[in-house]
Amino acid sequence: MLKLSAHIGYLFTERPLVDRFLAARDAGFVSVDLSDVARYPLVEIVEGMRRSGLPFQQTTAAALNADGRGPGLAALPDREAEFQAGCAAVLNYFEATGLRWVHLPSGTPAPGISLARSYATYLDNLRHALELFEPHGVGVLIEPINRVDFPGYFLDLPLARRVVAEVGNPNLRILFDVYHVAMEGLDPAQMLRESRADIGHVQIADAPGRHEPGTGNIDFAAVMNALAGIAYDDCIAAEYLPAGRTEDGLGWMKALLALR
Image (cartoon, rainbow, N blue to C red; front, side, top):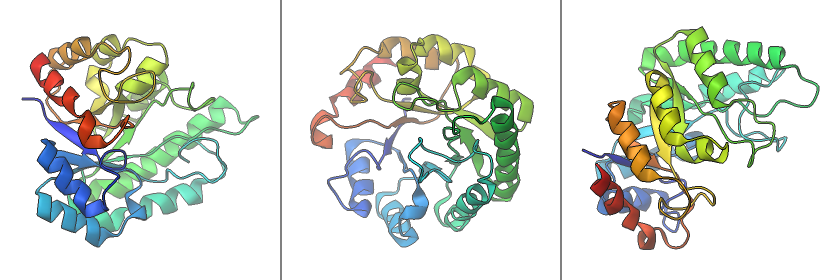
């Protein structure tokens, strides 16, 4: 059965936060994602979950980067204290929400910072977060983000797979975003098959444009076949920019259901 999660930082944003949970439920989504959860009052998230009955799948932490060089801090040397503070800021959300995953964006290292130094910083920061989150049963996601939208972004898919292998912790997995993979010029279906053992969470949007599935060039039939082939049976999160009012663009949900 296809299980879809609504990223309510992108979808239903015409509504107050609590009402986004209800709109997601009414549209047929079975869970929610929401980036940078520490920006939102915990009481509103808990109320949205209570009223909608939807679980909370994924958020980000240590994601906001004031230098404008792309989201995240995890691979940025000399900013470890900021990274650790960002991780600590989400701890009080865990028990109240049952949150499953936290994505820790790598960021874009400044010019002149060596790959080796950024890589060492990245591994140290990820290990810190894994140790911090493990008692709460929360896993860590790392997401390759395309370098068309974010030039110089640290993490791509081959490097993400290397990181997962080197850290060797089952609570560290890849957030596979079909949009970002396609924007890198890769075949999302093939990359899903090659990365199967490393994937923890999947997000979708079409490319180019990052709008609803079916508005761009991604072959979602191939994507769905690949997900079935790797036995991925967890939630697929809709993280796209609605071309108009969210409710007016949800026809893609039926189209995807027909592909499973």
